[in-house]
Length: 277
Image 1 (cartoon, rainbow, N blue to C red):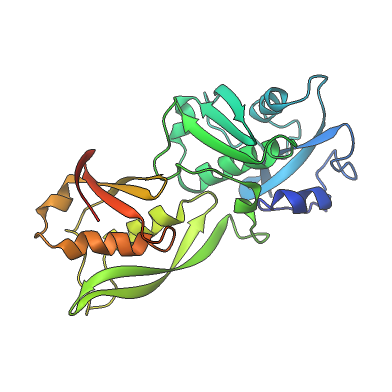
Image 2 (cartoon, rainbow, N blue to C red):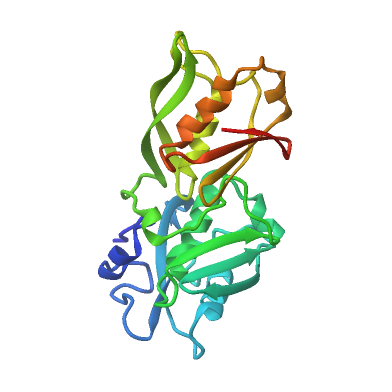
């Protein structure tokens, strides 16, 4: 019987033995390494990540592990998470941070598919004692809404959840007497940036009729980047169609304060700065 794991944290992974056809009883013992892939269920590709235990190549380290991961599984009941044409362009280690630059094809992934692919990379590479964190770029550029450093404990999920977790947040909207919070529960996929998810929910508008939207309908978040104690929130051009109201920008800043209290927030529109809070 296969024991499927949906992206468990690295420490738990090393303690558990996942049974995969052809590898039963062969846990991550000396001379073997876990390479993470997608599991099939009843012949269909599922949303669970499963390790395939492989013999270590003569040359150990980041490069050989990446090659094993991107070459795909040996077990026919597993599948690689990467689209055709996805490849590693370069990688380098700075301290325990592994920075991997991927080809353009990887940038075509989105949603759960992207989350699962990220999980396979992080869980596979963070087995190495020299790797504690992973930062992914595509063609040398940060990834929109995924511009963050990933760690194994970002993938601590329950079996069978399909890679989702819930996050309680406060979204701030203009009200009768200034800003007022609205409690929300957001569903996040593996690797989702919770701050970006909160801003996307904020832009979608309030659920309470007593609160007002922070932006005109159709405004979307183009990117959210963080530089030390400063957020840059880049919005679509429809943001400028709204009435001038400083509370709108303040609502974004208040929502982001959950992650960085008193952070400066700069509002950009289509890549151009228009103000800060």
